Length: 369
Image (cartoon, rainbow, N blue to C red; front, side):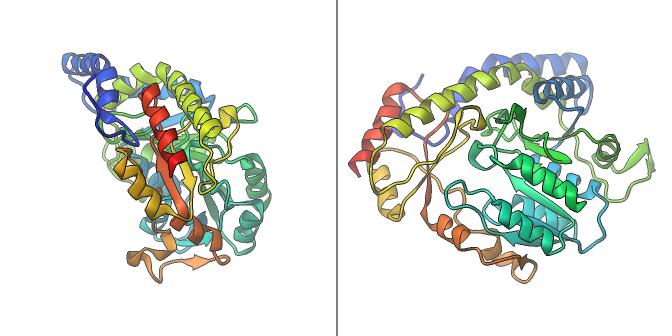
């Protein structure tokens, strides 16, 4: 392992080093069989990931963003429908909503968990949304996701789970992505289950939606050159990505546990009154990010820079404040917690390739701040 001067939030070099042989074997297999897009390796990964999640259908697509866009398209909502969602999840669900010519209706989140509350979900429903998108942010399952699902079913609206950061997170002995009508996953290289480039998947237990989604990812075809569903596109996963993901899937729960172990050490040993720590419980958290809250963010970032410790902000600009989207959304309520969090959150290094001395250095630096 090469010497590291900076402790990054995520260390791509260490990950590629660990999985180099998996990547080489995957590439060799694809070169030998000559099938490059949406073939047997995709079918294999779809089956393996479905078994892992205990879900009926997994449909691979080209990216996590495509997963969200196609999932919304598959619902068949009238153009201009209101879709409810929080404004603190990086803009991905909002962009997918706008790409489908619908109207984002934003709700506030809990200041501690950064997730929507049951009251905020109720407000969205009362304001006439046709679907709700929730994000299991930072790798933590929404603790009341089952209640949200039941509320949506009672109201006759769709629920989409954005699971881009929560691969393998469990709550009530069910994995994220299996509570809503559809679940959307990104396999971007920095995710807990990351490919060698862009890749994504949509999961569902609804047979009718599964058929529509499979058609939508390939132009809306019923069969080759026969377009039967509007809104289709070319969103197919490369065979290399599927083969590689299949090869590393058995490592996911091991790496998730390593992330939890590091997060547990942070939670136990970081003791600085200037920072607040995330709250989590065992399997409901897969440690995609470890996000502090502090009123002294700029000073803390400068302090971490001086100590060679990486950091990030996930995310600094709420969706309702993005310049490109002014006038294209509505608010179901004021968003004071969303605004406050955008100014106080800070991600510190958390990944399964951190060395013990690096973890200790992060803790020491924050406690010394």
